[in-house]
Image 1 (tube, rainbow, N blue to C red):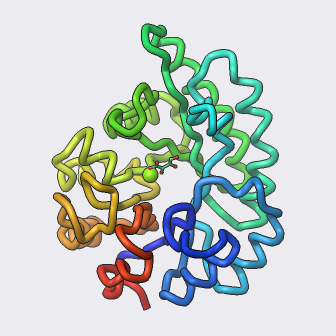
Image 2: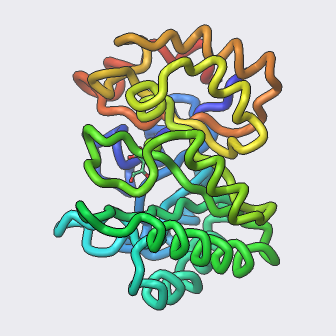
Length: 259
Ligand SMILES: O=C(O)C(=O)[C@H](O)CO
Ligand SMILES: [Mg+2]
């Protein structure tokens, strides 16, 4: 049975962030994920999680100045110190939330920049983060994002991410395989998932092209779920989509997978 995690950044936006845990649990989710926890107290978040019996499947490392368009810095030359300075804070949240996976966003490569410099920075930073988190059994994830929504993002293809993970060469670095981005950039998802399974630590879902509920659009999720089950995928599936109407109105698709 596929294990769904509610993405609280995108779902249950009808209520304030701290109230979304209760709604997710009420609907039968056993786990949640969200982008950034840093404006909230770690212990308060942990309290919400635990009182609703939820697992924290994933959250992101600080992305830099989001409002100014920054989308992480793991690959940005000159930002190494800043990237590394975030690690103790991320660890504090991961420990409070008992979360075993964090996503290190890579950042935007400016047009005309030397890509090799960005690759070297990314590899060095991810090794550093992986070594920092390894004693705590925490994995560092990297996620390819599609170029339509995120022009210039450092990683946009799944196999490109897998090749970088090979170069990083740390056991606790994995792939965050978001089917929405993967379908836009790569396609052939059944075969892609099959060939990249050893890298995949986390999966996310949404319809394509609208990024709404997964029972709409061009992807056949019941088929992909069955395929994942046959392949023995054990991780969480993050529901990272924008409800077309309200979260509850659109949650019918998930009923077979929620208890
Ligand atoms: O945008 C996505 O798909 C994500 O999962 C990210 O964490 C983006 O920030
Ligand atoms: Mg995603």
